[in-house]
Image (tube, rainbow, N blue to C red):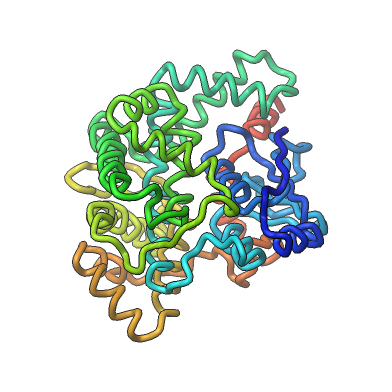
Length: 400
């Protein structure tokens, strides 16, 4: 368990935090978790008191939030929140003095796009480097067992074996990573290092002098995966030390001391990242949405020449496409024009709109991050649980 206290905010900010009935926070999630690290970084930056709890009693999160996924956020007033993206949006509104979403609507849209790309498209290389390389799978499997499954009444070696097999089945082999796509998956990571290195030559954070949602989105895979898993970390240190340094800078950032303006416009050096979104991520979202609409549980798609086979259809990622469209449609007319013009310049506009979407079934009543009840269908709950899984659950089911 880790804990921190508020930093040196102004007296007004500190008093507001002290008196807020939702504090202190409890974040449930293992240390190695992609999205737990992302959420922790935001909470640290906002200087909110919190504890990270590696795991709770079996069934706690599913009962409290409706899904057995991490991270889950437990408020001091006994409400529960789930899913890092809507949680961050809620925190941003709750604590506006330390907001991370840009107030400019165009910058906010592109920051959300970058976050979504990092959450969902960099997920595949993050899982690949962790579970397909022996040294990563052995190291992180051991850590995960000790932290999140220490009380499972099975030999530790057996639990590690179960975890590694399950992770590969769902997140690498089961998500299209094969000898035919291995090089492309790794190219996504290598290109990301190149793009971020170029951006960080000119400023400490992606959008200016302080971190924004774009930083925290990219930080998710970069922190607990790329900068820590042996193979990807070695690549980062040797080829992109500026990115390695940026990861530490984001983790260490505090709103009271990390001051300075954001840029006024989406920078030109974001262009290569946006190109990757247009040529890779959005076409994938479209193929996934088409498979969902057709009622397919699996689908094939060729992305940038790489033939991905038998990818699991993900209703959550249909929701991601729904959300990108919703955020665009909420813009004022002049902002829509500016966003569309930039999206068109990077091949993002057409794939954002080219497919008709069948409802994802996620957040039907628009309650997220306060999940549970009727916020999602049973099928989507199953998929949601697969995304951020507590290893103890599978081990106990296997034993039974």
